[in-house]
Image 1: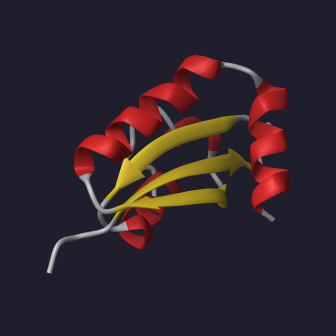
Image 2 (image 1 turned 60 degrees about the vertical axis):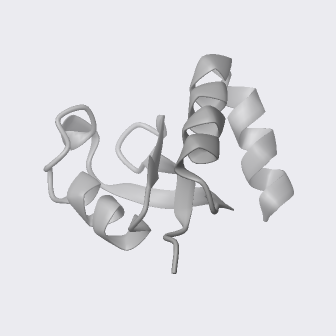
Image 3 (image 1 turned 45 degrees about the vertical axis):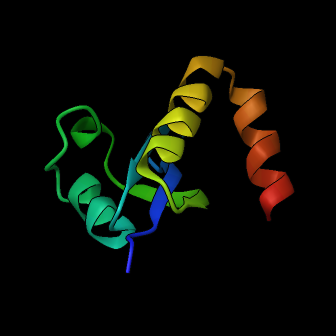
Length: 85
């Protein structure tokens, strides 16, 4: 059985900023963000998961993560999150 890769967006409850990443174990990854085990996100704890997309291929997940990170546009992320929910 192949793992499912999740591209995710988390939002800081401290300053409303977003962080985009991917993981084969989303629950564990979110816990790492909220436990301060991720250097970039440790200063903006707590985080909440606001968006996910699943991929059967790690390559496609990485491509999507890079695309989302390149947007650097808060309104783009907000629309994406709103349309998913």
